[in-house]
Amino acid sequence: MDEFALIDAVVEALGDAARGAGVVLGPGDDCAIAHLPPDTELVSSIDALVCGVHFPGTAPGELVGRRALGVAVSDLAAMGATPLHAIVAVTLEDERQSWLIDFARGMGAAGRAMGIGVAGGNLARGPLNIAVSVHGFVPRGQALLRSGARPGDRVCVSGSIGAAGLALAQLGRAAPATERLLLARPGDADYPLARYWMPAPRLVLGISLRGVASAAIDVSDGLLADLGHLCRASGVGAHLDGSAIPLAPGAELAAAVQAGDDYELLFTVPAARLPALRELAADVVEIGTIVETQGIRLRVGDRDLEVRRAGYRHFS
Amino acid sequence: MDEFALIDAVVEALGDAARGAGVVLGPGDDCAIAHLPPDTELVSSIDALVCGVHFPGTAPGELVGRRALGVAVSDLAAMGATPLHAIVAVTLEDERQSWLIDFARGMGAAGRAMGIGVAGGNLARGPLNIAVSVHGFVPRGQALLRSGARPGDRVCVSGSIGAAGLALAQLGRAAPATERLLLARPGDADYPLARYWMPAPRLVLGISLRGVASAAIDVSDGLLADLGHLCRASGVGAHLDGSAIPLAPGAELAAAVQAGDDYELLFTVPAARLPALRELAADVVEIGTIVETQGIRLRVGDRDLEVRRAGYRHFS
Image 1 (cartoon, rainbow over the protein chains, first blue to last red):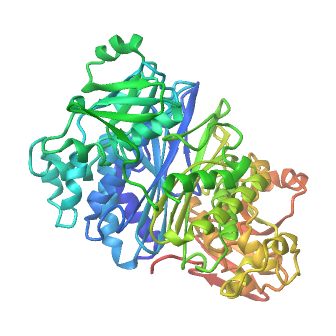
Image 2 (image 1 turned 180 degrees about the vertical axis):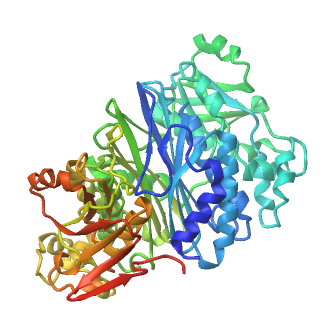
Image 3 (image 1 turned 45 degrees about the vertical axis):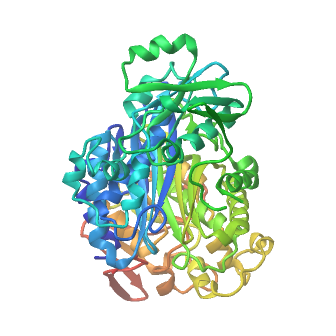
């Protein structure tokens, strides 16, 4: 297939996920066109997944498509944004054309699950590389930033962490069928891989945290690293209680707090708004407190560990 | 430098181009935030430049940065959009860290020239690949689409074509200094390379064509290929007069109409609006007419050539 026939096949594989709510013009022109509700702001992020770095070359297209969109959309959740659309640039080798169709199917399925369409994209030939640019909106001035945490705020995290980290050791093996991963529940052998390949960005939680959280970030580099980003942006530090950190089945604290890819929300809440948080009845727990002194201390048993550096970093 | 120090250095190299008009929150959080004027629509596109495919590995970062942003912004010009911001994903090898700073400087310079800032991005390690996601806005319903051309409309093109095509043979050699390229004028030996490395998207022309042009596209794949895209989207054909096509100095018709990378605007205008077009006093010329019968005919001397396929395509 040439470039344009391949684009047509990709759009067909995306199905009704090619566009999205609010999208006025989908794939096929120089640009996509979308409509934002009045009195909102545009919220935008871009993420790349590189073959051999973020996923093995043998990974099925369907799973890479699901993961690529999920990872990118998680940044919208971290801002408390409502999803608008994604646009996607894929660079791939000639022999990956059918892989690309699987990729589009996976991305379409993830898009339907998250309520975000793919409104446009770009195809080029080269080493496999996927860049996903995602867009959403928030009522003006209500985005959740990293920089709003203040001393005394409680540190909270959603769901459980450490599951995706457990998956890393299994990525080299053949991936289970998508259907099996879709059914995996906490405690199942496939659960870590399901968390890794099918991130479920906390969009609803993010939206409900507008006006409640003082700062937020998603757990992508690792809980400690991401809390470090949030604290640096806010000019504060944090004390964490290791025994309060909600671990995924099979995860161990030391590894879990340094593993990335969980895509839960990590956020801070002023004490006065804790009742409002509890009313949300979400699966969130308090794991620590923001303090004035920069740096992060993690209490494990009767020891305070000072955390200097943690999480995955590119380059070094 | 690790990932986060490198990001800081990139943002510093971008200087005041890191953000852009309308940007409420620039680099440093999970997402960028921007404000669209009331009664406008969001216009978005993504483009990728792959090392070894779109530019040689020896190309200076400064020029790749200028080209990457220019190529992407040209899609906004083709829609008649006012630029808002760009977000950029760069995948690169460890040893390219100083190249990346040059790249950011070039992108910043191009952004200042075009009036678009870089409001966010992503860095990852891997084979050099650059994805640029650009965003702008148009008054609601006024975007220039590919699909509005009707039989009888005149086909017009801006500036001159074929210069960037002449540069392709020279890309393997060491590039001239940026300062020399910035000064190159039509007819100079460096002019083709200047056109290739420093695309100047026709943003002002695109904006002025709102309400005048019935359809528009930018010349990226080649004049014939891009006219083919426009005609297919509109369900029409076109007759072109080869002698009217404005060639860059040194360019020959047959090669020029198939070469891409000129980033001029190719558009159609209903006869009734030709006076409005001429009042724009822009450097545009009429090169043909839209017809009902699909396909493109190019009149060269006393022969009519039927054009079946032209322009650069990935995959085949």
